[in-house]
Amino acid sequence: MFGKEGLPPKSEITTGINYTPPSGQSYSVLRVEGSHLGEIIVRKILESEKTLLAKRSASAISMANYSFQLIREETLDGVRCYVLELRPHRNEANLLRGRVWVDSGRYLIRRVEGEPAKSPSWWVRDIHIALVFDEVEGMWLQTGFRSSAKVRLLGSHTVVSRDLEYKVDRLNAALSAQSR
Image 1 (tube, helix red, strand yellow):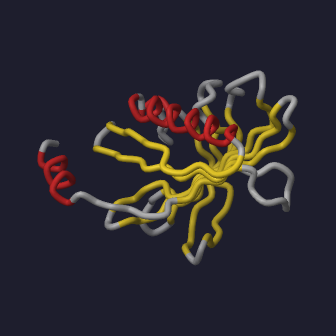
Image 2: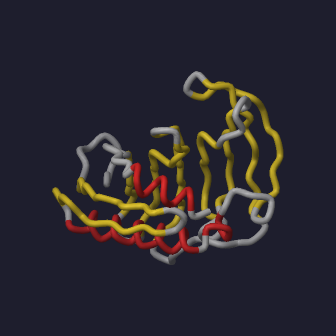
């Protein structure tokens, strides 16, 4: 978690997240450095993700939740992408008003960027969120997250999340695939 631009992070939190398809997720905080506020924010983000995972269809980037419009084509990290405008059908905090970058060859989402259709709290404003997706051991996953916001009484803050390591339990992955 960062405060003013260019300064060292106020907090650095390392968590372990266990995901069991299709909707099971648990987490544990492994290390906390710096401000305790960072840990509180990370725990709120992870609890929110657990809630979203349980109701995945309500926030999915799909025609049920959004209308799309092709804006342009561009190259993102060496991959040709369609850039689409995201227009949410409902004003909800778990839907974004922004853009999505879709791999033009594989039709996989590579990046999503925007603002919540509705502010999640009176305490936070001018929220901007960016999600990054990539392939990890044959699975398409969210691998990064960046959110900046102005927090009342505390000023501007940025939260950056990136995946450090993946451990895939092949037996559980195979059993989960068989049960579908």
